[in-house]
Length: 407
Image (cartoon, rainbow, N blue to C red; front, top):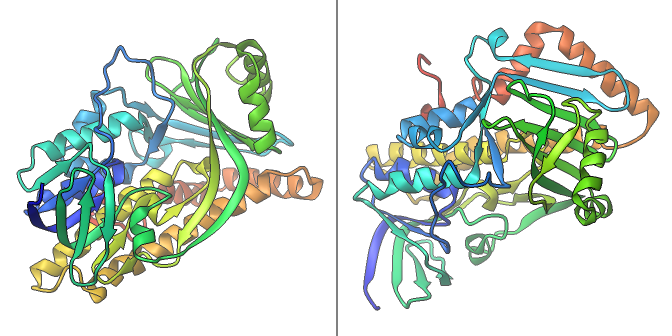
C-alpha cells in the first residue's frame, strides 16, 4: 500500500488518553488518524474483572460526558464510591472523605481500563473524521516541523501537520523527536489483583500506608475489591511467589483486617513503578500527552486523570487556535498547552513523590509528623474539603470540557 493521506492530527497510541483526544477533535471536524498496535476488545458483564483499573475523577467524568463516552463506561461495570478512608499503619493518623460533605453524589468511579478504552473506541468509530488504524504497528516515525510522516508495518504512509505522542511511557514519538526524559525509579512494584473479603467495602476506597508502601482496596460493583499493593521490588516479588492462601493471610494482616478475612483472590500481577517527566511536552508540529509526557506513583490514582486533562487541554488549545485562524501546529500554539499542563502535572508528581517518601519509611520522627498531619487535616473541614475538591477535579485551571456544569 502506497496511498498517502494527509490528516490534521495523527495520534500514535489508541489507549484511553489518545482516544479521548481523538473524540474531542473528531467531534469538531478535525481529520484525525489514530494508530494503535492492538485492537481494543469489548468487555462483558460476565467477564472476569480486569487487573488494571482506574479511579476516575469528577473532572475526567465530565470530559467523558462531553465527548459522549460516559454512558458506554457506566454500562460496562463502573463502580461509584462515596467515601475514601486513608490511615497510617504506624500510628493513629487517619483522614476520611465523604461525598455528602462535599455536596456531590460520588467521589469518583472505579472502572476497568479495558472498559474505558473500548467505550472511547466505540465513540470514535461513530465519527466520520476519525480513522482508526488498528491493529497497526508503527514501522518508522519521521518527525518534521512542517509535516510528520509515519510508515506502518503494512507499508502505508500517513502524514499530518500535528503529530501527537499518546504511546505510553516508552514513547516512540518522544524518541523520534529527540525529547529526553527525567527519570527516577521508585524501587517499588505495584502488585494488583481482585479479592473478596468477608466484610462489605461500603462503597469506600480504602488506603493504608505501610512503611513498605501503600496498600489500596478499591470497591467493585460486585462487592469485591481491586487491590493495589505498592512494595519494594524484593517484597513484591515475594508476594507474587506466594501461594494463594499465604498471600491472602499476608494481605489481610497488612490491611489490619479492616474488611475482615480475605476469602478468595484472582490472578496476581506486578508492575514496576517509575517517575518520568519529559523535558518538553511540545516541539513545532508535535505534542506529548499522558504517560508519554509523565508517569507518577499510583498512590493517589491520578495517572489516568492527568492524561485525560492533557487531552482536553490540548484539544481546547488547538480548537481555539483554528477558530482564530492560527496554525494548530505552531510552537506558539502548542506552548500554550505545555505551560497549562506542565505546572499542574509537576505539582502532582512531586506531591506524590513527597507522600511516598514521607509514608514509606520507618523513621519514628516522620511517623509522628505524618500521623499528626493526617489528624490535623481531618479535623480542619475547609482545608480537607479544599484538598479533596482539587483532587477530584472540581477546582483549579481546568479545560472547559472538564469543568462541572455551571462553571
